Image (tube, rainbow, N blue to C red; front, side):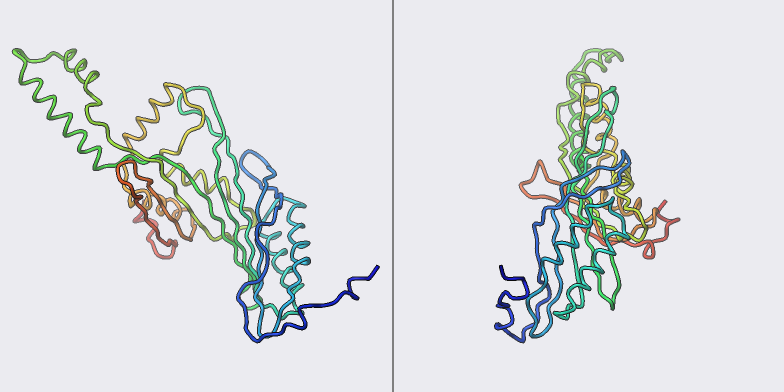
Length: 306
């Protein structure tokens, strides 16, 4: 049987002078271990890895890239293990003069969440992506992206609903021959309080932050965003939990701009920098409301944001 060194090198006969920014692989199945607030968990991830190819070069060593990525399954992921992987993978491509490398890992983590009022609990799912890049000139950079799903009630719709209820109550009370008692007012509100219902919608915040610390702050980042928004989607829900969620929605009406600023304030106060995208997937309109922004502690006065 021929050894690998005796096999024909087809790439060497197909030379060209056109450089390429990225050559590599995507959709690589890779189990990874993540350290979360509930403990370490193994997740099924999808990986992609690319290197640049300079003039006249080809024949990237993809099997070497693949073997290097496999090493990420050996221990819980950290900034150090991801940096080591990037440096090793790029060093293996010196024969094709690659000078930069990027790779990503995408998966979904589950976090345990208690019910709002009852004794139940369940699991919420959070898509996340780790993106790494390395070159000798720029060094190593790592970012973490998480998605948090929540409910947003429209402030304008809430105001219109309150106005409709006020007008209906005034019309009803003025039609009565005698002033209404407290009990009669309470009964009317119980029967007519949903005369006009403010609309709310499922919403998604996609937050990307630069990672400088050794450990990956996955649980910390998710919990920070959920606390800032106030109305994350629920898992286990009984009637009293649903009532509590309705109260939270009523206390937290927010436009897409409001949600974005809540998140920026919370993230900057914890020293994060990065980018966020907020989508309110409208229940009234056929289109969605979207806001995007970059944020950095250097751009904001932390005291003024309290």
